[in-house]
Amino acid sequence: MAGSTHIVTNQPPPLTGYDVYTADRALTSAVERHLGPDLRSEAGEELAAFGRTCGSAQVQEWGVLANENPPRLRTHDRYGHRVDEVEFHPSWHRLLGKGVSAGLTAAWARPGGHVRRAAAFMLWTQVEAGNGCPLSMTHAAVPALRTDPDLAAEWEPRLTSMIYDQQLRPADQKPGALFGMGMTEKQGGSDVRAGTTAARPLPDGESYELTGHKWFCSAPMSDGFLVLAQAPGGLTCFLVPRVLEDGSRNVFLIQRLKDKLGNRSNASAEVEFDGTWARRVGEEGRGVRTIIEMVAATRLDCVLGSAGLMRQAVAQAVHHCDHRQAFGGRLVDKPLMRNVLADLAIESEAATTLALRLAAAYDDDGEQERALLRIAVPAAKYWVTKRCTPVTVEASECLGGNGYVEESGMPRLVRESPLNSIWEGAGNVQALDVLRALQREPGALDAYLREVGLARGADHRLDGAIKGLLTELADLEGVEARARRLTERLALVLQGSLLVRYAPSEVADAFCASRLGGDGGSAFGTLPSTLNLASVVDRSRPQA
Image (tube, rainbow, N blue to C red):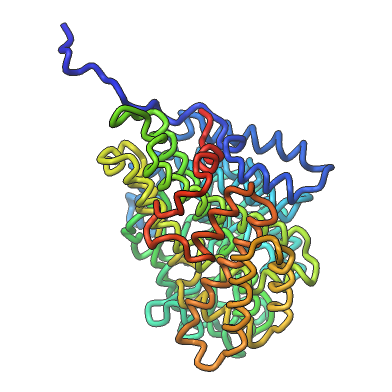
């Protein structure tokens, strides 16, 4: 006979079996806004189907298993031969296959591809963020390879393929390929020009032998890697294939896998080169310029990934509070909890709206849009990724002690949340990049001011923030010491202008009041009580 003490009541049901895409009103609105009428229906159906995949119990379980069973390094086979292979749980391969087949590496090959991919990338991040790393690098490698038309013609069809092949074999024998990247070294970190990996030219004039190391190389079982090394003409970009054309393994010595805070499903390695064959990409001495387009694309993915993590954290918090009774009523109806949830929802929607706007600029590819990306991508990467951790931590607190327990899934979100702020250039790197754009590329600031100016006159707090920003920009004396403050203001003003133009009035009103007008505290849940917070929370509610 079951004990009566084990009757379970007042616990929310799992947030599974729902369409993650259509339940996200901010995301669906952004996709419809940035796609032409000829693509909206097709993309909407495609994303809704993918949203149902992301919300399924089976796929969510794959994410759990991939994190509970992290990759293992196997340096040698049973006979003592060096193999340098990483073994993954089957769930990792299932996830990666789903991501590739959903077009997360195919943006460059189809119309409206960047907006469609951005939305899908946000959805997929909510299932499992680790496999987003090889998906992101594969997607981002395309513009770097395009600096060499022959290499692009050879590799781009493989990278934009929607077929995943996990086997290590020559790339020309595979229906699809994945790419990684190796830039940082022990002594340099973000200062990639301090790299000591040497590249010795071979007689054919295009091939080289590399000798050196990379301190951080994610997804080391990819089919190819873009790496930086010192050639006779200076720092140069190279393509390093994992398997050579004759079927032999390239010299790619995996020393160890990193034991990371989060991102547990994804292998990140220290690797060494010792006579490793490589093909030059671009001109000698122009390695940073060649690889910078890849870096810019992965930085946008950091914004998308953080926006996805925030969205999932908010969805879980609102879902819990919808179903949890406390103090005589639902938690979601309690004024103070509603304030917290609304504040979190505003941060999430602002991140989503900005991220999709930047993806749309990639699809447009006009001069004005490229100029906007030059300043908006590092500003968004700086700010959105930094907001991810406080959002996920506060959302976990909405679940009380349940949010501190692994089974809730919230600790995984919290551990993942700092990653995008650190990878692809940490906060100071982004802020300094914004300064370089301001000082060297006046067209970037012009494009930014035109964009935010589209909302001028619609909200007095936004107008005041734009005026204050212009004052800051007029005095660039000693600007490096306040680069973070300036970058934050650039991101907030851009978010505010987009929300004023596109979001419901209650969302824009709350954002401008708290983020631009100073009518909000330092913690979440300090919005002015006069705002229409119930509507803000209702807009963020996931419909299970």
